[in-house]
Structures are given as structure tokens and as C-alpha cells.
Image (tube, rainbow, N blue to C red):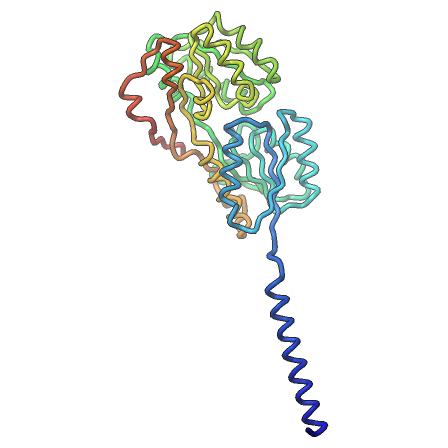
Length: 326
């Protein structure tokens, strides 16, 4: 073989080896992973279901999720929010009003897109200014159910109901907004509201004892503090045969008598879709605030028997009802 033939053979062989390694490297290169950060204000079943819905929606995508709970502490939520903003994720996610507010405050200068979830009053809590056109870097999903629907639901089960107790945290913006709405609507429904505040889950026990002599029923409406101590409410109220209504359908398994509320897992799925839309290039300002597509009725038959309350067959036969929340 001549010198030039050998050189040609070596060159082609080298190119073949280079091509082999190029293909091999491309096959072994890791997929680009996008990172998002989630703050949840407190651990309880409803918000946990919301988070699970988010994670299940994102699981088939190359997304790394950083998650922390603020354990019901607004100061801790602020600290976590600052930490997350400093780490520069692609999207920030707040589950609950206080967590979402903390992210917005921490993100004033970085302008990382924010998606909130399970926020009852996004406008009243100053998370957005407009539901259909959320100008800026924030969008999300509300878990709002009209209190008028809740009171009508309660009266169908307790026709003689006139006095309802509400336990809420005056430090939760969504709870304060809801209480103001409930006060107005209660008058229209000829209901008297008795209010008891609880700043921490420990305070919930005292608040429940305070209400028991004054009411015919207790209603817990999306308040994270009350929901985190729900077992205590049930233990005290059941002893005195006071039914507990709830806007969180998952609380039926923990002793609530009846619940009318959104499917929290489905809210998480809606939230996940908004996150994916932003990661694909949509601006949060172009994504209107979403609301639950339907309300779900749930009843605790064992608790009804303990309380001596008969649930109408018409309600038992229709455990889910569609309602327009737009």
C-alpha cells in the first residue's frame, strides 16, 4: 500500500472513530431539566392534594421540583420565598394565600413568573388586580366557592338552622375576606354568625369551646389554621352534637358532617397546566385566573347518625353538582 493510500485509510478511519464518539456522546447527554419551586403555607390534606395534583401533572416532563412547607408560619414563608427567589427557578408556585403573598414580595425585582394555587380571594388579598387580565408576572387557580351556595347547602340539611359558628385566623387574608362576604350573605339568608378567631392551631381548641354553647352548627371555610387542627374541632363538637360543615371535601374522612367544595386535587391539576403553559412561553398576564369547574357534595353517614340528622335522599343521590364559577 502506498503512502498516500495509507494516509487516506487512516483519515477515513479517524473520521469514523470521531463520528462514533459523536453519536455516543449525543446519546449519553442528559436531558435539560427545568426547575420550579413550591411553597405550601401549611401541611393539611386539602393543600397536600393540591400539591399532588401539580406534581402528577408535571411528572412526565423534565422538571425538578423544590418544595418546602412554611408550617403555618408567615415569617418562615417569607424566609423560604427569599431563598427560592435567590435560587432562580423557572417558575415559583405558592399553595395558599400567605405563601403566594410571600413569593410576590420576595420577587419584586427578579420578576420570576409566579403561579398561585388554592387562593380564595386573589383580588382581595392583592395577589392580582384583575381576574381575567392578571397584569404582571402572576396567575393561578382560586378555590373560591360562593358562601351563598354554602349556606343554602347547610339549610337543606338543617332547615331550622339560624346560628352558625365560624372559626378563622384573622391573620389569613383569604379568611378575613371570606368572613366579610359571609357576614353580608348571612343577613340575606336570615342567619346569625358567631365568630371565633384562632391565630395558631393551638388556639383552635379554645375557639371551638367558645362557639359550642352559642351555635347550632360550625362551618370551616378554607381557613388553613382551622383545617390544620380539624381533628380537635370534630372531637369537641361531636361530644356536644354540633355538626361541622366544611368547604374542604377531604375533611369528610376526618369527621366533618357534610362538605361542599372544590376537588383540591383537580385544582392542582389546573395549576400544573398553567405552569406548563408558562414553561412553553406563555406570559402569566395572558393566562386568566382559573376557578373550580364544579362543586362536590360529600356526606358522612356515620357522623349523621351520631348527630341524629337525616340527610335527604335527593342530596344523597346527587353527590356532585356542576356550578359555574366564572
